[in-house]
Length: 384
Image (cartoon, rainbow, N blue to C red; front, top):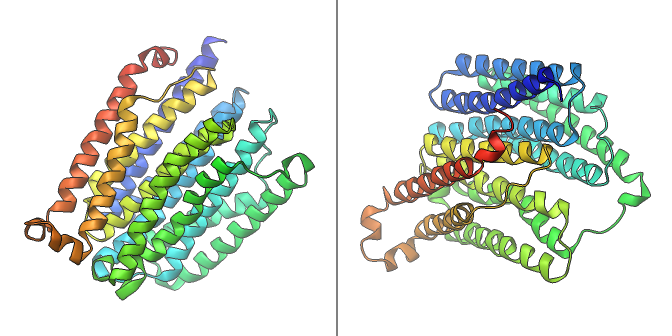
């Protein structure tokens, strides 16, 4: 590998981390009401992405899994920004445009579908197809819609969102058609993968349950919806426990499952944390730190995989996942008034209890991220 190629790859990885940081700033600016600044930072992030991709392609060193990672990051960033706008509207006005919430669900669905299709192609040793017309149009429409909502151009919001949803559907259908026209792809998922997929599929429904009752405000939800939200989270945790056990017991451990399991965990947990922001259970800076940790560790893991290196799961990561689940359950349990009344003194401190729990979750998450980077010094040395 030439020195020039190494430099380009190093710059590309640094830029990817900087882009994630830029989008964290975008989310913060959204909550501070600095719409124009947030829009400017989105534009900066887009330009950084284009320059990064151009450098990789011009040097002909773009690797398939790294390209998939860039697509996933772009999708997650789009989803995070749009969801932040949705949650902000809920937080400040106690109401939000339902079409925006539906659009967020479609953006998430497209990200999941494209990621699964791409993983299926890559695990067979094939090249990813170039972005097609519908995909490019969907990305453009999503970006324009993001700007329209950031700048609060109410006259254009609905038409832009409808166009975005239609283009997302068209691009996903086109990609699915391209994928499934190959007979080799028409095979059922393993039971373990189906359990993992269930978390991804049910995550948008959790959003619906969380914000459905009483003007989309979870704090005033009926006990039925609160219990249902809690049951869904417990279901997420149960499937997370069972999918790995079943895959190993039935000899169905697969590359798809190894990528899908942590991906589904992050999708479900980050969605729940965004919901907590809306209900004032978590400050935005805590969720931003959690998001930055997750993005950074996954970037490190992907970089290692691109060089044929393995970054094994750390005990701190397992503790982080377990404590996140316990913390989420504790908050949702406490939100149910009859349950809260059973715990002496909990009602008196409930106004700060969720924030304390989220603070502990954030601290453990950051410590886990530091542990991953410290233990992966041998991997980082290959890029620095």
